[in-house]
Image (cartoon, rainbow, N blue to C red; front, side, top):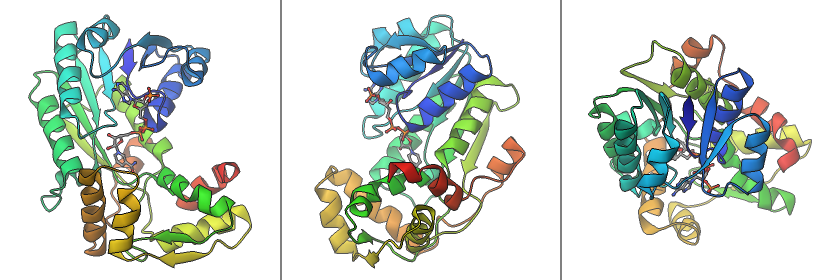
Length: 284
Ligand SMILES: NC(=O)c1ccc[n+]([C@@H]2O[C@H](COP(=O)([O-])OP(=O)(O)OC[C@H]3O[C@@H](n4cnc5c(N)ncnc54)[C@H](OP(=O)(O)O)[C@@H]3O)[C@@H](O)[C@H]2O)c1
């Protein structure tokens, strides 16, 4: 049995669906088992278990008979959740842990709170005494959904940094890798940096979205200070600082190397942003 957490979310959900479609016995940990997302997962054949990363007994109960665990901790400012997942895995006889981390975790220049918290989680996984695999994806292409409201209203999409290249990755590729390494042998003790196959700026992404939507989407750069003010309306201070520092690293070209892992593991190129945009045009 494989347990997937964060399964009503982007990567966990796609991973659970892939595993169920290939006939794996898969269980998902969800906070609301009666919600629409849990019902969709149940329809794929996944077994639904109620639980919360902040509730250790619920984790131990969900991990009964589980051999392999995909840990998705969406709130990296709560490293206690990684700690609870690793402790429950050890107590329940889980043998293999896969942690969804962040691309910056291996970059010594990345010292923001989100990256530091993921590093702590990685260290817990590595020192658990269990077999483990770490996944370090770069920014998800699906982050472009944050522009949906402006695009739908015909407003200008405003972004900082506008012209710094990065290697965003399709979360479906992240899920395909996660499904592979959580179910098949040969990945113990490995750390995979997951990137897209091309260098792209935010300006490129907005242009590509316009092509997929058959329209011109207006784009305007924000300054760093304007971005900080906009993010402060939606995120706690530590996350705003982390986003600013990630932007600074992007400008310094610290996040712009295309890595080989997705291609090596999946035997094909990682998805392009234009493919992601075409496949998700209906959401805009
Ligand atoms: N976005 C990026 O560009 C990016 C890049 C690299 C790495 N990452 C990492 O990817 C992870 C997020 O993955 P994602 O985008 O697939 O997640 P997501 O779509 O934000 O979904 C979050 C999931 O976690 C569940 N959840 C939230 N709090 C929980 C709790 N206390 N106990 C149990 N489950 C809980 C949510 O369930 P409910 O339905 O109950 O809310 C949901 O299923 C984070 O660790 C992030 O740092 C993100």
